[in-house]
Length: 415
Image (cartoon, rainbow, N blue to C red):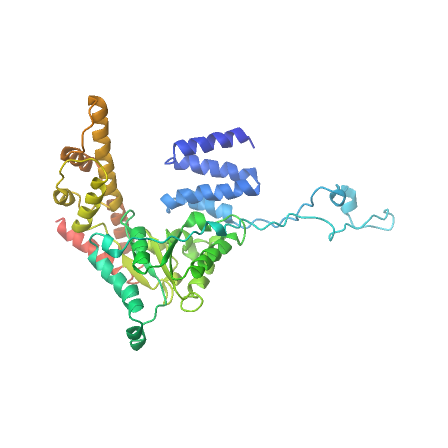
């Protein structure tokens, strides 16, 4: 394998991180190299693609190939007298006419038995200072979180009286960029608990059994730091439907996740499991059974109050003239939190370039923000349309009733 070609592709991927084809080509070359270190790097490269685009078919197929169990190979002894090459003729069963040869001393031989990809030290626990009060708008979402977690936790006597269990977790779903991770951190801050976030790149590994060990290590880290919120991002990539993962190592990961989730209420006391996904219909149904992620919460694009709070916060960090954030919030209906951050970033870029051209620094103006709003298409539209298709033509177990109502209201408001 030409190392210079791999190095060149690494540089190209770094310079053009949005080029998915480059990343996948690099992963294939690393896989062909055949050694363990490059195989781990290949998995990490594909995981980075799926973290951004979980439905990328090429990336999913490549990841399934990378994680597929390979034939078991006999370990090659290390250098030394015991590992001297054996003549091919000596591999046959000794017969009466063949010269007697020494038996291979398997006990004295040395083998590379180093553990596979142990990465427990990367699971660092955060202590978020964010509270739910810091989350603008989203009143209904906050009420659901209060009912599911905060009220039972703050009132142990009433919890015992009404038999309210703390078993189970919460699945946040909705369009990308709408604050699911921020909500999870705010909940951890509200509970005065630790916060541990894991994603596909933290869990998946090429070697058989390593992905399950990584997942177990994450739960162990959360247990050791209890009370702790364990946040699983892009759950559809880690907990994908097992009917879609036949022949790949992902089935074992889902099974391990189910076992870890079943520990809630016993050895998982004080561990609150939250998960987020943009594709809830791709999550294995077993993960949403009672005692696991049995509460589902739709996180929609920010409402008017939330949009104004996001815009106000983003603009306050930059030099700007007096901005009517309420008017701007009214003009950005359907924008995600990430879209709103992009609006302010684009407006700042316009002001910066104009300052370079004129040689005089000026603040961000209302005109800059209006120009940015007109140039940006809300990213939530394609997700909502694809969700509508799934709900109309896919299986419906009633889990996504909130999303159905929202889509119906959205359709009526556009008439």
